[in-house]
Image 1 (cartoon, rainbow, N blue to C red):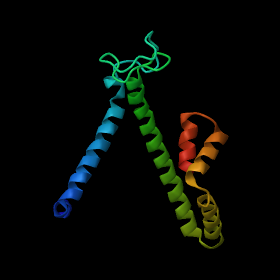
Image 2: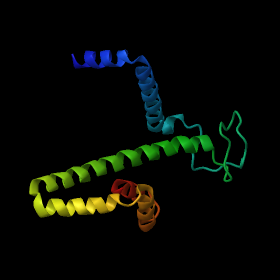
Image 3: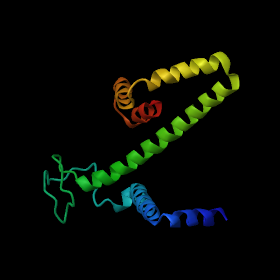
Length: 152
């Protein structure tokens, strides 16, 4: 019943429905590529070959970098890392935000005002600059990237 209502709603605006399907297809294909990265990458992204700085060809679809690594394989494997960072930071933000909201709503009063003041202070900084500052304090690494994105 609910699914039929949603389909009927989407069919009313066919262009919106088509764009939604195209967007969902692109997102799904990127997620699928990230999951299947070890199987679809033609070369190991961490191993250097003797072919440095080659242009795109049939052997190396996007060429090689200055260390001789296949750029296409590195992009595919990088998408897996990005997917992990996105999922982890979203989950951490969801848990922390829900807990802070529950605490603020349950206790109210001074606790609510204090949490609101802290959150308003965090929101007063531009998000990108704040994320860069947190990442600079924490240092390089995937875990530190997840933490800095989760904080912002």
